Length: 251
Ligand SMILES: Nc1ncnc2c1ncn2[C@@H]1O[C@H](COP(=O)(O)OP(=O)(O)OP(=O)(O)O)[C@@H](O)[C@H]1O
Ligand SMILES: [Mg+2]
Image (cartoon, rainbow, N blue to C red):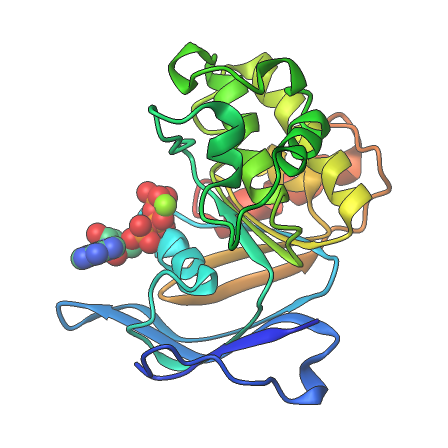
């Protein structure tokens, strides 16, 4: 897996990764990100394994989106070292589609070269949106727009998929479908996923591993020892949910 290294404020820093990093999709060492002298991320260490589905929880404003932006390479004003795959993609809570481009052109937006329409069609079929290939973004429902955004991430064939509250704006039923879709895509693609959510049930339902961020670091880190498919009513499910709620200071 080709990797990028983001170092301390080195413009365009992208060098070959040490071979020892090969089995990890992400390796973060001593990461600090400050705004106006306040460290939102404070000497954070984190390793994500290739192919693992990790969910990141944490109270509002604790720095989850900031961390995702750093991993995506969208924010390089950092201290510490960040090692991420070159093939990475990010989807945000709002689908961020360009209204003046048809859906398939949105899916290909930002890809290098002149990628063929077939690439977009394949990704749209994967998210069940092939019938909306030529649609304008404003004619999509919220769930469809979110799936188009997911197709835009998938077309990059990422080794690391970063999802920042991708289901936050969806109604309950659409949300369940979108969760199942992401689970299927992850199982098929085998990429590492880092999903940010506020929904503890969603975390336990989807994740191999759950992290809780607090005080600028990973304050809690647990594997999810439950078989798939998971049942919300399962005693193990409830126990982990309660533990995570306690870590979040809710219980
Ligand atoms: N560009 C910026 N300039 C100044 N402060 C910022 C900037 N981006 C983020 N922050 C601050 O950093 C802190 C963490 O923000 P971040 O968006 O990472 O939180 P979050 O954990 O994603 O929260 P939420 O769950 O509400 O989305 C907040 O206090 C926010 O105001
Ligand atoms: Mg956020």
